[in-house]
Image (cartoon, rainbow, N blue to C red):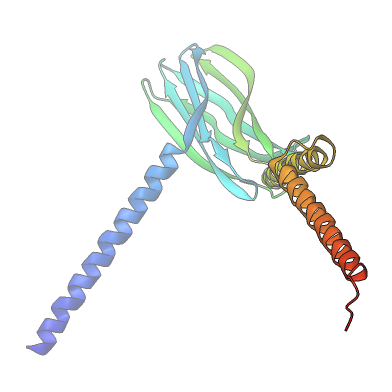
Length: 246
C-alpha cells in the first residue's frame, strides 16, 4: 500500500513538471512571436508576394530571428534564386556582412502556394545601431523572366548598451550635481540672510535683539554711574565726619 501511494505521488509530481515545462515553452514561443516585426512586405511583383520579419530589437552578442515568407499567385512560376544578405555595423559605423541566407534556388512554386523559412543571425558584441538587409531574387513565369531585383531595407535595432550605460551614469551624475547645486543655493541664501541680519544689528539697530542689547548696556551704565556716585558720596561723608570731643 505504501509503495502504491508513493508511486501515485511520483506520478502526480511528474505530471506537474511536464505541465510546467509545456507552459514555459508556450510562453517562450509567444514572447518570441510578439518580439517579431515585419520590415519588408512587397506585393507589387507579378505573381509573387514576399514578406520578411525579424526580431524588432536586441542587444549585442545575441541571436535575432528572421522569417522569409513567400506566396505564389501565378501558375508556372519558378524562382532562379532568392537570398537575403544581412549586414551589421561594427561600432555603429562599419558595414559588415553577417550572413547570406539562401531561401531557395531553382525552385518551381505551386499555384497559390505559401511557404516560409526561419533563420537566426548572430550579432557580435561590438556591433550596434541597426541591421541592414538586401533581398536578391530573380524568377520567371512561363517564359517571361523577372529580375534580377535587389531591395534594401533596415531591420532590427541593436542597442548601444555601453553608450546607454554611460548616459545613465551621466544622468545620475547630473542629478547629483543638481542636488548639490540646490544645497549650495540654499546655504548661500541662508548665509545672505544671516549676513543681512548681522549688519542690521550692527548698523541699523532695528532688530529687537539690538534694542535688548542697548537696554542692557544702558542699565549697566546706570548701575555703574549709581555705584560710583554712591561710593563717592560715602567717601565724602566719611571724610567730612565731624570730630568728636571727649
